[in-house]
Image (tube, rainbow, N blue to C red; front, side, top):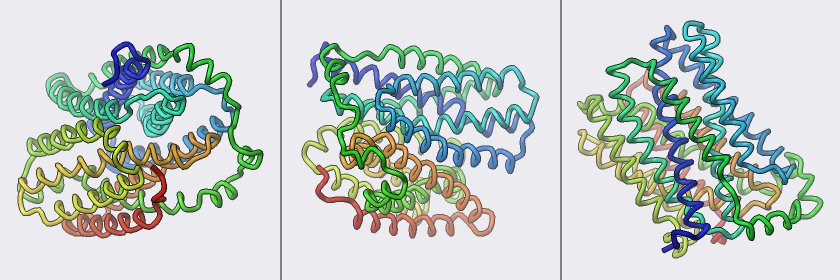
Length: 403
């Protein structure tokens, strides 16, 4: 166990607060986007366009920003995160100043979703920055605290909105963003690690690695790009279940209260899996853990597909422990290990693009179309097939030598 006055312990606690605040913000302004926008006179189709536009723009935005960060190695990620949070705060403030202007509201929400989705990759890279300096920051524990915070605040805010209305969303999110800005700026490296960071060469790779264009980058990491295809397929099936969970629950006779319990089960089982990742990765290769998590995605999709009642839906959510909760830290560590230092931020951005970006966007779009055209069962059948294919692709293209 880490000593309480050790740099690793202190940074883990601080980073856990950072993750918790981010997922609190995401829960408040992201998860209740439909509620807020519907109250402002938006139609479901318009909301879908806004959320999809934010997801697509985040793919472009984080790819460009990650490439710039990798190119200019002296740029500290905490200042990148600070600027993103400042833009987020200004966007939410603008929303509160123009509550009845649909164009400003829609534009601000697109920017908010672009920033929120992109920030996930940079928060992950921020943790890896410390780990690569030799500080044993427990990423899994911190990320697990984020999941618990998300579940708790979503439950609390949901009840508050029922009593006070959706107007509470903006001041609550502004407060959380302000606190997160303060914590972000408070990060300091201990003197010994700061000296080591300053003495690092700008790029540890060769000159050829410094000047990688997209084609040469793709050729150098072509196996990784093929692996990302598998990740995207897994996340399409994952998004079917997450985004349209209320439809799945209603299909087996459940209601909104069952939805709350089902989401809570998933969040609760995430914490022990993520918190124990440091131990698991010391006993098992990171590449093996990714393959195991891919198998759990497929198993979860299968159980959800065949579920005859709400009890089986609850049971399927337990497999969140071995799927999403195991995949999140193992994939981030895997990317950190296979990438040259000059490409690590770009690698994390590509991981986020493949999963939350492409996988999430396609999952939301295709899932909605399947529901409107066919049924919940057809959507889940397609999700199961895609999850199995994603599992096979992950098995084939994961580098077994990555520790």
